[in-house]
Image 1 (cartoon, rainbow, N blue to C red):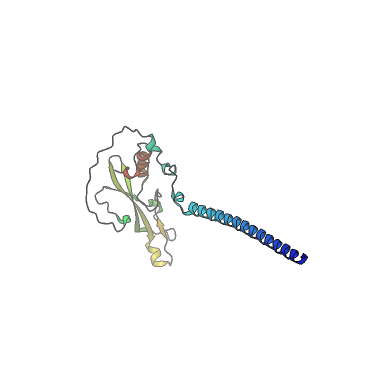
Image 2 (image 1 turned 90 degrees about the vertical axis):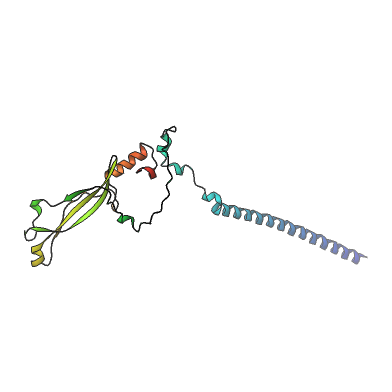
Length: 207
C-alpha cells in the first residue's frame, strides 16, 4: 500500500510540474509575441516615416521665400487683360545662337592706345590680327537694343617673320555681369526693379 501511494504521489508531482512548465512556456510565448508585434509596429512606422507621403510634403514657408514683393503689392490693382493666341513655333537648336536682327545694334570698340601699338619685342608697329565680340542686351526704358563689345587682338608682323615667338596683345574690355550670358547691368537692374519694386512675377518682367 505504501508503494502504491508513493507512485501516485510521484505521478501527481509530475503532472503538476508539467502543468507549471506549460504555463511558463505559454507566458513566454505570449511575451515574445507581444515583443514581436511591437517591433513590427516600430518597423512599419519607420518605413512610413521614411517613404510615406509625409516625407514628400513641402513646407509652404519654403515656397514663399521670394514672394515678399507679391505680399506687399496692392490687392485691388487691376490685372491687365489677357488675349489667348495660338501659334506653332519651331524649337530652337541653341539659345546661345539666337538672332537679334530686328533690334538696333550699338557697337563699342576697344582698341589699344596709339602709344601702345608697338611690338614690345622689336618695337615695330602692331597690326589688327583678329577681334573678339561679346553681345549684351541693353535695356532702355520702352526699348531694347543689342550692345556689341568688340575687343581687338594685335600681333606683330615683323616678329612673325623673324622670331619664333610672336607677342599677342589684346585690348582691355570690361568684364560681363554674368559670363556667357546676354545680361547687361541695365538689364539686371531693370529686372530687379520690376520684381522687387513693382511686384511683377519674374516670367513677366520683360513683357
